[in-house]
Amino acid sequence: MGERPRVWVSQPLFTDVLARIDAHAEVVRTPEVAAHGSADIAAHLAGVDGALVTLNERIDAGVLGAARRLRVVANLGVGYNNLDLDALTRAGVMATNTPDVLTETTADFGFALLMATARRITEGERWLRAGEWRRWSFETLLGQDLHGTTLGILGMGRIGQGIARRARGFGMRVLYHNRSRLPEATERECAARFVDRDALFAEADHLVLVLPYTPQTRHIVDAAALARMKPTATLVNIARGGIVDELALAGALAGGRLAAAGLDVFEDEPRVRPELMALRNVVLTPHIGSASGATRRAMVALAVDNLLAGLGAGPHAGRPPNLLNPAVAGAAR
Ligand code: DGY
Image 1: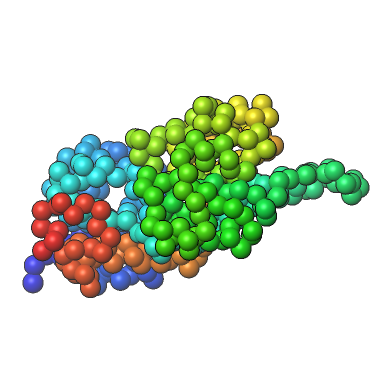
Image 2: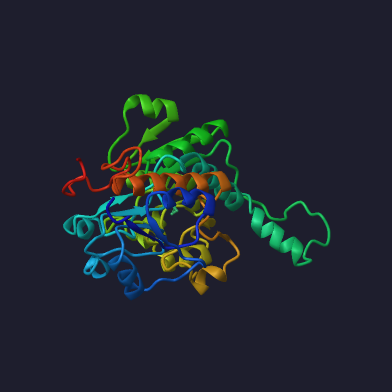
C-alpha cells in the first residue's frame, strides 16, 4: 500500500464530520481559529496533497509555488473569491466549493436581515437596552413596510431565487437583474421580472445583493448607483463586502439619501469601518448568512466529499462533484 495522502484543515471544524477523512488520509488540524498569513499558508500547502480551506485563506500563485504534491483545495463556502482559479488551474490543482446545501439557510437569513433593517429591529433593541424607552409613543422607530413594496434582487442565482420565493409570501413585487435572464419557467416560479440594472436600483424599495464577487462586480454599488436609489429604500448585502463602496454607502446613509442598510459582509473583514459603526440606521452582522448548525455541518460534509473525491478516495473518486476548474489535467479521469 502506498503512502497515505496528507491533508491540511485550515480552521477548527466539526470533529465528527472531519473524522471521515481520517480513514483515508493523515490530517493536519488547526485547533484554534487562526489568521493564516500567506507564508503560513504556503508552508502548510507545501507538505500536503489536499486542503480544506475557508474564505479566510487566500489561495493564489504566491502560496502555490512550493505546493508540489497538492491535488485538491476544497473551499468551505459557495463563494470562492478567496481562490485564484487561474493560478490553481495552472498549478494542476482541483478547486471545489459547497453550493446548494446553504441555499435555503442563506435565503432565510437574507430575509431576516431585510426585515431587521426595514423594521429597525436591532436598533429598537439597542435603544431599549440603553434605557431610552421611557413611555410608549406613537411615532417611535417608524420603519418601512415589506408587504406591498418592490423587492429588487441583484444576482438571481439559487439564493436570489430563494429570497424571491419568500418575498412572494410577503406580498412583495419582485424585480431582478442578473448577468443572464432566467428561463421563463423559473421567472414564473419566483414571480420575478427581469429589469436592467439601473431600473432595479431606481424601482426597488428594498434591494438585496446576492451576486458573486469578481473583479467586474467590485464596487458595482458605488456612489452613482446609490444615487439612483429611492431615499426611502433599504439595501441589504449578504454576498461579499467588496461589491459595495462602503464609504459611499456610509455617506448616503448619513446624508439621508438612503433609509437604511443591513450588512452581513464587509470590504475588510473582520474590520468594520468606523463610518459604518457610527451610524444608527445600519444593521451589522458578522458574516453569518449560512450559519445554522445544520447547514454549517452540511457544508463541511460536502467539502469533505469534494476533498476525498479529489484525492481519489470518496464516492466520486477522481472528479469532485463541485469541481470549479474542470480544465485541470486528470480531473475527469
Ligand atoms: C459562502 O458560502 O460563500 C459564505 O459566505 C460562507 O463562506
